[in-house]
Length: 134
Image (spheres, rainbow, N blue to C red):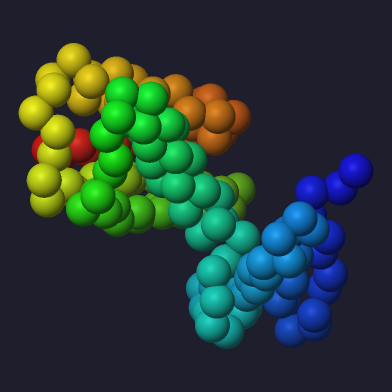
């Protein structure tokens, strides 16, 4: 069974619907690639997906130990290259207002983040630069 149903909306836009939840994502081509830049670009969703996957895995590890990730935030920077046009690097900066004091668990979470399914699925030519500011 399908997970996502998508359609082309015209004007370089797409709509994807998550079948189970009916949540919707609209993409738009970026300004530097003939689009209007009014929504996430397809490559933005890839970069965002990496950060979200990392946090999901860290959350699973923390929850297993009885903790949560309250106050954790992150910023994603996507760096493109041309010829061919592709994602060259994804930079993720994590910040945590009140990090856990358990260094062993923190190390486990960081390792889990770096080996999340999206991180392992991206082509090895895409550089993943991750900073844990906690």
